[in-house]
Image 1 (cartoon, rainbow, N blue to C red):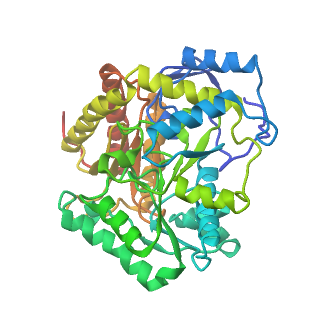
Image 2 (spheres, rainbow, N blue to C red):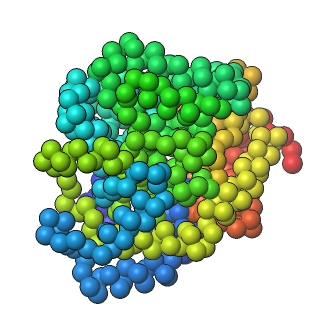
Length: 448
């Protein structure tokens, strides 16, 4: 029997003790092997224990592990900032390092606000976001999050921000490939700006390709461009939350590259450091940063901003992505995995949708594909299927799609180093888990 743990996180549930992790696999202390089919929480983009990244971190550790940004510049942070700027849209030359996604989003909205105040637009403070969405767990980022179970208990402590519906065309019976669909959802942003009063709206924050709360939601044709045009029309800043979609997972370094749209500010984390060190960044356009610095400086900071060890890891991760052709592999293997997931729909009629881009993929379970009604809440599918997959040796990630209370989707996002043989392993274990879930839930399964 395990000794009592002094750690606590969301619940009292316990997991096996991790012994080691290499590539796409992880082993517990009893020797059981798991395929990391979600890259942790969509973090381990280049796989586990990459020797070149570890070597880069070791070399930096021999020099220094910490240098406070107010006391020293460090070579790794300067090099990584330059590299990030080169991978970002033109004009986005300024980088502010943080330790995670929530910090990156907080930094983005605080920069946006300080810029507005600096240029005489102090009436602008509202940040419009989408429902559902997830932008972080700190109070500022949580105010932007459209996921009631996470945000409602803390609402008295926050300034609630306006929301518009996420463009879930698959639930609304609309054609994702029709530009009219994208325009339909984008017009909801314009309507909300006018409802709130354009002079009060500071920014719109959006995940170019959805993360956990929408399950790898790809926007309808024309949506991202229309959103950019609306923001420009009303002087609203556009913030791209690339915490999950950035770092190459979708086949491009930034998810927004698929749509040819450039934001004013980017928040990135998770796969950016790929789990080797806590690392994230806010990337901003010069035209926003320069006035703020000229006015006396950015009123914000984190102790570990620009930590040299984390930045050395981040630089090595990007080098690995580029030298190993991992974005190309994410695109290629993502296509294979998505096709395999779509094939599962023939056998499991309760899979209602498969979506995503590259290796940011998800599937959603429903009671009926025509109506897209969710499975009964009491089946607890979002938890049950994860546990059945885990027992098979497959790690996947789940959320409840509809207000966080019902609807069940599952992210299948293995590391970008995945091979086709390993994709087949994922599908075999997932098929076993789905079959066991169907039997337990009394759902029909077609014979193979």
